[in-house]
Length: 213
Image (cartoon, rainbow, N blue to C red; front, side):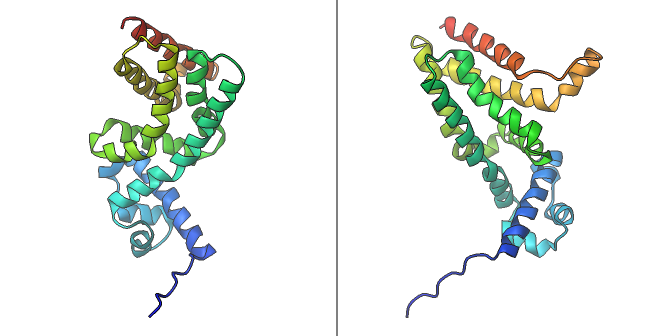
């Protein structure tokens, strides 16, 4: 007997799932994986707990879906920026890092609270080895392309040093977005931190590291 075709989800179902993922993003970002609960996420989304399980599975699968949801869009924007920079002429280290850093900073500043929450979510993934598989799936392929690009600029450098510099740069980017209030606290009246300063900081650090190899 021919298998019955699986029906495509309705618009209402897709909207409900998006609301659940938005809620999960906020709750996981604020409380981390261990501090969040399915009940908290359901309350944030305004749905029954059963609907969260229906659309997201268990907590670990929901966490995975929430991280993966925006990863493709962010990767696409970063790689498009890198392609445009290549087409524009000879690349520099600062130009490569700008293509990686600026797209997310722009999304976080202009894309609404969900993109800011996503940055905090990425920070949770970055510091916890149990999410190694999620990082490998969602972030490592794009990070690897940027590491390759830097390696072409510094062929004598050890790849480990470049990879370390890339990881440190991600940490600096997340701190730039989430702890900007500290700059204001330490320098009252300071204007909003500039992406150019962040890129210069990261480029200088990587350049010192690779020149030691």
